[in-house]
Length: 325
Ligand code: MEV
Picture 1 (cartoon, helix red, strand yellow):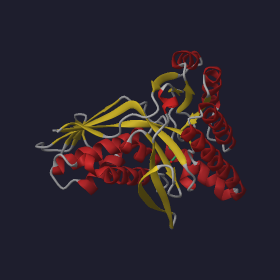
Picture 2: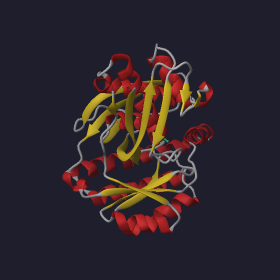
Picture 3: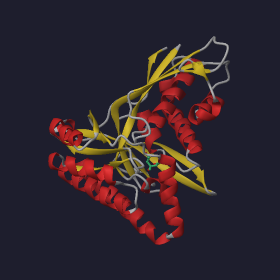
Picture 4: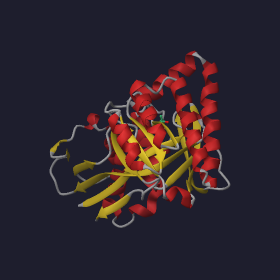
């Protein structure tokens, strides 16, 4: 049996705009998805039940690509709020891809992080009508703090290029790691879950439809890109106040393109007195917000009083890993 785990993620800046080639920054959070795979069984199963391919498009994509052996018994255990913008499906894909590679080759999976990230990205894309940036999959696979950009950034640690065919065009992203300055070791992010799922595919399609019927709105997407660049500079300089301001501005712009909602706005407002900045995170339409703070306890209390479920995390944890082989 092989057991692998991978973290969820939170986007600090750039969601939605990253689908259109702008940069995004995400951190891996201390909530993990754990997947175990066992050979020597007669039939495919998941969590003890018969495996139905269509119900698990990510997993089906991955074992069709990475596994040539017989049936597997798959067991999934998640600490990540599901369908909440925290990258649970990317974490599932990263952990499952790592487990399959480890099972096929023994002891080599973690040497293949770019392959794990690629497979997880393509699994996401196949489940999101082709429109998926590599943000979630790369952050889950690499861990830490990840910068996705349309160009190779000079001051960041470049890892690999990801490409995807979307609507007849080739989209290309450069994936980097960022080492965060010491200032951020004292800070935490507090995640607030509205309790309602955020349907990623639907929200990504909603933005695509808006842009098709009103191409002028691409200006808003471009502005998210500009704010993200300012946020990246602030992160590199260890300027936590400026990071917070960029997060607040990102939230305002995301509201403007219609992906936030009342529940998210309420939690964001509740967190702000105790935070440097707060915004929705991920695709929106429900799901989660996040706040950057050095007073995690009070910030979490304020979010809970406003009706959210909370999770406190450092900015970046270890990426995909093999737990048992
Ligand atoms: C989802 O976590 C983030 C989006 O930007 C979609 C994507 O990047 O694929 C909304």
